[in-house]
Image: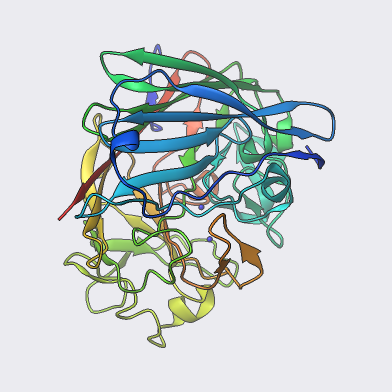
Length: 390
């Protein structure tokens, strides 16, 4: 599908009630109402879980970008951007009710943790002790297990300040949750800047050695949610290597060259240009579902590594990150059984993910950058999405 840690700086669920609220799709609307800058985020009731926990939806807008975010899973329900004519459309795949998010298995728009992507056999050894995790993807653990951060209700605090407008999301992951050691205190900040950039800043501390790899799982279709496949989108990735996988989509440990393969996006090409080439890795994953090793490596500040553009609308997204890798997932398992807020079904390739991360299965791959977090250290990671239309 899916700081020095080393992103570490040293010294440093189930079920809903019928009480759900529909989210009206934002499709091809005019711009003025969306372009209001610096307004304090607004909050509304969205639904209730089976245990009575209320879930709220927050709306924030700045610099010509508008988002709707749920307290459940930190989910980005909608992301609205203008095209070259100034017409706004939601470019993020999702659902219109809480019930569908709770029942879903696609991670639409969600915060992912404790560990983004896969860990082989749901098991790793740290400091001589083996930890068995929740297994939810065949024999492997995916995106934190059966009840990961995407299925938790977060404490949300809005803010308006010199950096922009946004939300601070917090939760405490108890020692042993989904099998992970240590009590992990997590803070994730979503900011919309005056330029309309969407910035995500992750931070976490632990009271016991553990592993951490946080990311966001938004599916993008810059032509608009429900508009069809993204195979005509142009993608550039500054990465000369990727991590091949076995049949279970676990990295083999190799860092393979992209040159001469369908995995070479160093120059812009359409997502669909090579997606049906009979390359063994594409056959196994039914498309792209791989980690690219970014040329820039792990950095202290976000550096640009990807550009995604829809030629028809002109919408363009540039992504910068501190992370050393990105999981490019081309929506291979969308099978036409899911319906978005547009009322259209999602089929294979109708959205794609670019999940900034450390590499999958790093706790079992000593040659990969470490994802270990220890007491006294702080996990930090940042990713910035910049939008334009041309």
